[in-house]
Image (cartoon, rainbow, N blue to C red; front, side, top):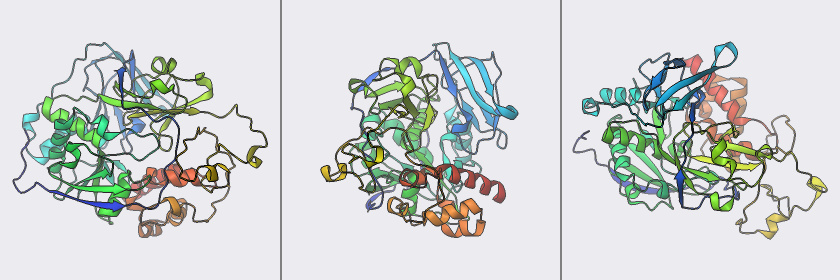
Length: 466
C-alpha cells in the first residue's frame, strides 16, 4: 500500500465564481437511477481517444488476451500501454488510409479473466508511474501544454482534477461516485506522490458527497457558475495558470477511481456508470447503466429510443465535445455519457427563421421564446443542424461572452490559424485545449470548427517545439 509523507495532508478550500459562460438547456436529463448491466459480444478500442499517443499494435488478430492486457503501445514511449477492457480474442485490427490504425476489436469470452499487477513494488514515484503505464491507466492523465497524454518521465508542477462536468446533461458526480469512495481516496493519494506541488480538486457548489468535500491530500476549490466551469482548463486558469516552461497534469474523478482500483485490487478495471441522455431517449430509459468502454451500442439502444435511429444523432459523450457514432458504433474510452438528439435532416419549418420561434432556443434572444421563458428554465429539443453557412471570422466579441478564461479567444484563434508561434505564446496557447472553445463554437455565427482548429494548432505546435 502506498504511503505518503506525514506533512502532505493538505485540506483547504475556496470558492470561485464564474460569470461568463452558458448553460444550454437540453431536454433529456438522466434520472438518478441505476439501470441494468450492459454488455456486448464485441468491444472496440479507438486509438484516437488518446491525443498524443503514437499507436503501435501490440497484438495480432486471433490473439487471446485478458482484461488489462496491452493492445497498443506508444512508439515514442514503449512502456506506455493501452489495455483491453475485457478478456477474449482479438478479432480485428482495422486500418485506414496509409495503414493508419482506426480501431481494435475484441470479442469477449464473458469470463472476465484479468491481468494481475504487482502493486507492492510501486513505492517510489517512478515505480508508480511505471505501474500506471503498464496497466493502461496513465493514458487517462493528460498534460498542459498541448492537451496530450502526459509524459510520465516528467514531474508536473501540479495535478488538477475536475470532479464535475458542467456540460449539457452531464452525469451527477455525487451519484456516480457512491460505493467508490475508498478507491477515489486511494487514487488521490497515488497522484499526490507524482508531483512536488499540489493536487487541486475542482468541485461544483452542488457537490455534497463526503469523499469529495473531505478528501485528504488535495486542495479543494469550489466553482460556482455556468458551463464551462467544470472544464479543467478553466479551473487551472482561475487557480494557478500555466506559464511557458511549466507542465501540469490533468484528469477527472472517474480516472482517479480507476487508479484507486488498481492500487487496492491489483487489476485494471474500467467499469463505469454511463448516463443515457437526450430528448430522443425514452423518459423511463434516461438513467445510469453499468458498462465497460468499447461496448457496442446497437442492441443496447434499439429499444430505448423514441424514433428510428436513421433520423437520430448518437453521440458518445456530450453534445459539445462528444464523438458522433451510430448504432454500429461503441462507447469511447474516456466517455461516461451517451447523448441522443434528432439529426434534423427531415425537419421542415413553416416560414423558417422568420417565424416567431415560440419553441426555439436563441443565444442572441432573437426569438419570442426568450421573453416567454424569462428565467431560462425551459428545456429545448435541439437537433444537429448548423442553421447557417460557413463564412469568414466575424470579430463581434460573441466568443468572449461565453469564454471565462483570462485569454482573448478571437485573437488566439487568429494566431493559431496563421500559426504565429510568438503571438500564440503571448496569448496563452499553453493553457488551452479544444474543449475550452466548445461553447465558442456553439455560439459562433461564422460556423467555424473551432475545436478542430485548436487541436490541429496544438499538434503542430508540439511537433515544432519538442
